[in-house]
Amino acid sequence: MNWWQRLQEAMDAKGWKKKELSNRSGIPYDSVNKYLRGDISQPRGNTLEILANTLGVSLLWLRDGIEVAGHQNVKPASGQLVAAAVIGRVEAGTFREVDAFDQSERELVSVPPDDRFPHARQMIFDVSGDSMNDLKPRAILEGDRIVAVSFEDIVNEVVLRDGMVVVVERSKDGGMTREWSVKQVEIYQDRTEFHPRSTNSRHKPIIINRDYSADDGTQVEIIALARRIINDLSF
Image (cartoon, rainbow, N blue to C red):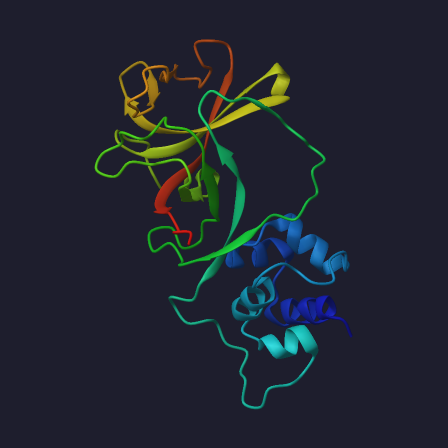
């Protein structure tokens, strides 16, 4: 039996579908699908450990089929690290072509569960540029990583309000090109504005009306709510 067959066995024991495993582990659904098809013989990093912890089975059993005496099929303890996928790069003013057929496996990073939104998918964005280098009380700088939660997963739990820091997607050309950028929310009676917080005056706010169509004809969508900043030091 291969490791992905044991993965299916553990899911069946829990009564979980692929979507449930994806939501609980933080591993993208597409990746879970590939694993269960046997497309990936060796997942990157600590993915197998994350899957084992999420399913309450031992890593040795999932990876190698070795039974561990006394190991119980239990839910991982609170505080257990979960996986967050590195979604891509946020850079104000830079539109990139969208590759709808990109099937490459995303990098996964272990992060603490989000206490406020424990069931929301966490995702990571790499920061380029200086569009948020004057954010208070903590600037977001080039080289930082933003840990965010999927706005789609929390849209029924939160009300958009002034001061929130979000990842915004602007798309044009029928969705063939897009820009991901970090902005701070300002809400007015007739509009919502997404502002850069920068010492560089070339960065401008995105101003939208209530139907979320931008004033320049592009489409605007909030894709994530920023929750933490990571900046690992290199030596």
